[in-house]
Image (cartoon, rainbow, N blue to C red; front, side):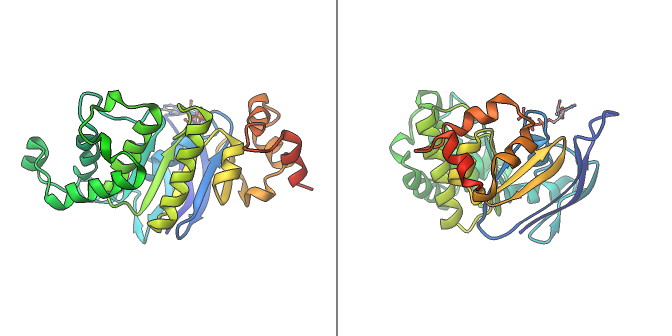
Length: 268
Ligand SMILES: Nc1ncnc2c1ncn2[C@@H]1O[C@H](COP(=O)(O)OP(=O)(O)OP(=O)(O)O)[C@@H](O)[C@H]1O
């Protein structure tokens, strides 16, 4: 379970970007975080894995307080937090298998890491997961020979190799075409339930958030102003979060099999 309480983040002397966020995510929930550019979505995710230092507040993952962890304890905690990135963050010149095994770096010793001698059990797990997401036949291909969707599958498997207790995805579909985006969202949804893993997804595409996640959290200027079911994410919620920003409305039209009007109708 992830429990965020009174989370504040201020960069330097600027006004706080997160203004006392509270969020609890249990079980294998798939939660999307939506909000206009600059609302604080990435900052929130990055506070969880401590790529960004929270200014104050508490972030507990299955009972462990993550804020203020240092050194070895922080590295241990980070192993339990898988991260999937918009730009995939693969090492292009390495093979798919080598990229996937990088997910084990937090577990192996320095010698094993440098010589890339991973335990057989890691290699077997890598194959199982690659099989699951449909990229096992690419194991020996260089990462830069894959399509965007395939690369993101590598990113997902690498994160799962960490045996995470939570998966964070920072706009995982923003670099992909609409069809591939939907496949990746479906994949994240299925993996969450298969692995009993909570998944938090920062996403700009409101239609996909509605279609593929079971809970939507809406941020505006660092405050949570919506937390509820996709069915309750109506025009009013959309306006409150985006304040009439055109792109949000445009994205509603991309929802599979629905029109903008159809979504607005949901709210009635
Ligand atoms: N390292 C940093 N130093 C200073 N300010 C930062 C830093 N990172 C983010 N910010 C500021 O914090 C605010 C929130 O940024 P953040 O990236 O969390 O928003 P976001 O909702 O994820 O936006 P986007 O959807 O565009 O990625 C923005 O005003 C941004 O300029």
